[in-house]
Length: 186
Picture 1 (cartoon, one colour):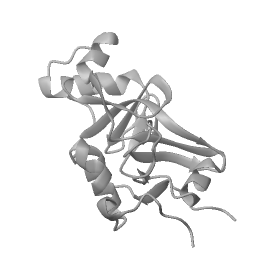
Picture 2: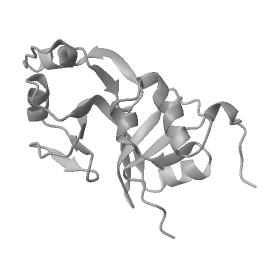
Picture 3: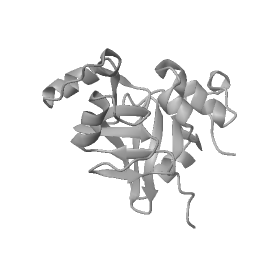
């Protein structure tokens, strides 16, 4: 039986998920197929600002708002590799279109464009990603580790970071404050 494709969906950590990498997180799923899944955690800011990343790459930004953007911990895999979720979709040197409104880029050109004020209208810069092997994510969903809901660009790019977990769950009609961490299957 083929499971649902979760690309362009949110994975919302259930309240009882104790794994420190994913406690109270919202992960945007960038790819999901029979080989596994890959996503970016969108509500775990690092104590790192974009200007620090740009400086390490010898890129200068003269825009204080851009330079002060938070960088997110995208997940525990390849934590030194950068990813940029962006809206609207536009082609960069190394990018893929996730859906018709969101893309992900891993190239220097998008960071230079952001620094110069010529980047996408909305962007989220993350270090690392979340990854699951074949069948792993499907099993975790069956085990009540995650809720899933359709992704929303407003939550990714405009909702305050500390509100994203609850806002994403609300898309699925769930009030996380009313959920028990002892949920099981009947």
